[in-house]
Length: 361
Image (cartoon, rainbow, N blue to C red):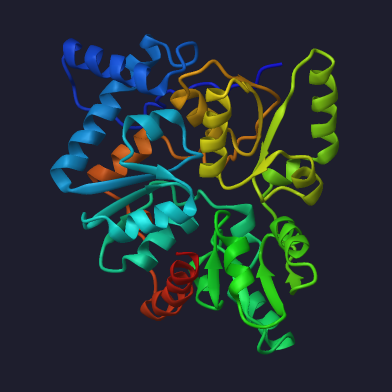
């Protein structure tokens, strides 16, 4: 009952990388196989196939002073082959802000690249896959926020970071999966509006019960909405029959019944860290309730044999970007691969992100 692994994303032939010697390709392939640490899926021949791409990407980064950021949900060849920083939304927004490089390439979905531009408006921000959206981000518009504020005047609006720049410009504070409980507790008054994730909002409402009323929106992440408490209970029963004590780790974008059935709830970084900790303590039977990229990182970084049980769900948007897209954007980005935002939107959105940094630290 091990977790099903997706196939390795092989080059599509859309970009021709530079020619490298057999020795250079062999050395790079060995490096990739070691850091990805999934020998069956990413064997030496697969790594040789992608080696020319990673070699040229890393060369162009160095020559052009580019800082390459990747979300944890990106594929292992990007995460371990070319990324300079890999984390969840909160840490990556700080990394974009603090990086000394004047060009940021963000391998992720669109709203994350927009966030990098908001916190670093003077930098060039590249996003290789303009069509890589997000069902949660797409569920709400700036007009929706303005309507909520008119219905509940004076009530602070907390916005999950998985939103467009225009939405961020209309709210009081942004939050991430690693800080939303702490920040929402600190907001003034006894009511808050939480957008757009209704599942995270339900968890927040339970956490703040008796303290604050949460006015919730109805958006959701299609990946995390797939999981149910019933499925977890079924897995627990099946594994218990085999003498396995299952450790369930879930992302807070999941529904409340999933959270209730979980041993640990946290951001993708928390889940990664906790899975590695459990493995080091001999608790190797782990179910990760989140996008598949987190499981890839746990496999790559664990020094212990882990039994990742169940089935993860891949985000089709997070998996849109491949090495070829990154290489093309580094060579000669198309206009729609360069993040451009209205100055007024940036100024207003900056306030909500600055407030997040202030309340979270």
